[in-house]
Image (cartoon, helix red, strand yellow):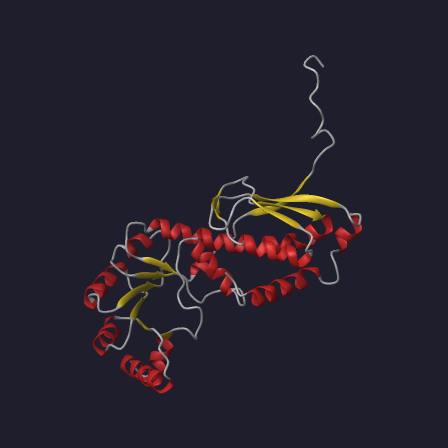
Length: 296
């Protein structure tokens, strides 16, 4: 799923940020060598994401920790569900706890918000896309969470697609100049990349449609009514994408315009983390006591 070296580096830096020269609270309160168990407890309903990351965090802190996965990524979970338990050195469990939660809460929040959007547009042909509005260094993880929620990934970065945005158009002094420059660049470099252009109004739309040499047109901040008109003008010649000002309350209206894609930066930069916590599992002395006589 992930590039292991990259994920390992991210986890190492996250642990270093949190642990510094040691978890002094646990070192002071927990006797060395004490073993125990903890469980992840859901405190909100949503789509689970980040189990594999959690497993790697525990292993990075202490290879002897044993994680028992009870619910897998992409599953819809409810309050009081327990996706996993972990056993081993208590100091190690507590050292990993916050880093595990920080990753899982954010990724599960992204997966859950994506799931809401996807569910809202069911029955239409539109697909929900993310954007590059991601947390630095966590893009691969956050885009994975989008997929778990039922969405699809837009380009991963600046390298895997040509996307001519408003600033490119303005600097190039027009739609046609920008597209023509892209055509020349691809010919000169031998690159074979998908080309998308962002348009802000019907004048730019007509310029893009008439000039061609593109694969997709993004309709930026178009109203629902204007998207309907734009889709009719494009008439299937290019893929269509609506973006800007789209929220849960109006995403269905945009999907029903006939647009192919709806891209939402809010999936990764305005989400609410899904609430969950790590709780100690305490086995009291009477948990395994024999049954008492009926008349005790």
